[in-house]
Image (cartoon, rainbow, N blue to C red):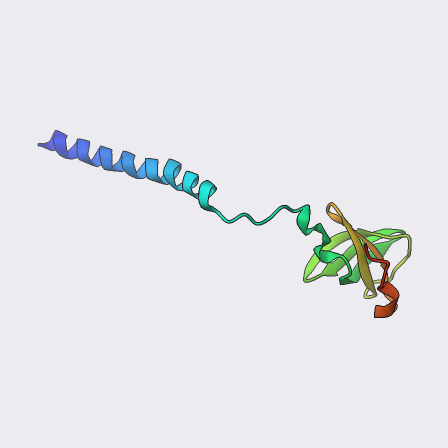
Length: 109
C-alpha cells in the first residue's frame, strides 16, 4: 500500500516536471506572437525628434521616446538641443540638426 502511494506521488511529480519543462516551453515557442523582424522596424525612428543628453565631438547620447541611444553626426551639439533622427544604423542613430520642421523634408531617408 505504501509503495503504491509512493509510486503515485513520483508519477504525479514526473508528470508535473514534464509539463513544466517540456510541454509549456514548446507551446510557448510554437504559439508566441512574432514581434517582427528588427530590420523591418529600423525605419520607425527616422524623422523623429530626439534630445541630446551628452555630446563629445561627433558622437554622444540622445533620448528618444524615453530611451537613451548612442548617436553620431557630422555636427556638434549641446546637451538639451533637439535633433532629428536621419537613420538608424544598428544600435546607433545618425542624427542631424533640428532647425524647423520644413528643413527636414527630403533629408530623412
